Length: 316
Image (cartoon, rainbow, N blue to C red; front, side, top):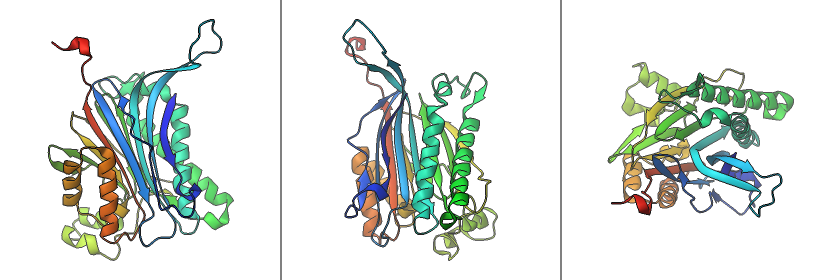
């Protein structure tokens, strides 16, 4: 069963609320590592509505007791076997952006609830029973793409809506990332911040193609033109995927461009270094984005991975 830490839907909050976050941090214990995650989304200082969404989920096996002579809980959970982190930044104006990002996260939820069997038996190659996990995550993004496009075809006022989608799934020490758009996944390790995903924007493609110097990208007038999204004018999202390994002390950061447009990578790295607690780190990053202008919605999910402490009887 998938235990959801929180699915934040900003538009369901009271109109007076600007910010939504996950509840107090609950560790997801997986073999080898323990994950502490916290997410926060904020409307920012210039926007009237929040079109960002995020999800933090612990994945665990469950035993549902239908009948028993014993006095026991109706549902019992084994240790969590993995963690899922997702951020989505909707676009489309009016209700479209918030609708697209919510639909995409719901599609990811549905996919996981019906495909958990491959999440619990990964071998060293990132496969289980012949199933490639990265291929399955690509499939999840394509399903989200189809759901957003279908909703837009039914509701003309939502035509063209789309969303970025950046997702990280961890199992043991393995990390799987799938991504579309200009939200980002970063890995902070040993004092250095590494961007794991590429920005799917016109300007980023110009830089990668050698047409535009990298130093001119941050202020280019076309930097917000996204070339690859979930939804949009037509089906056809291209999912970028990565696989790597986590080490004790690693920190993952998933964020929308409301953070990266306002806060330099060096400031992000300094914050993750200074704030060991994921909640403190997330709150500080959102504060920095707003202090620097807060021109867009800003969403961050921070997860720290540490070695599982030995049981008291295991220590010498």
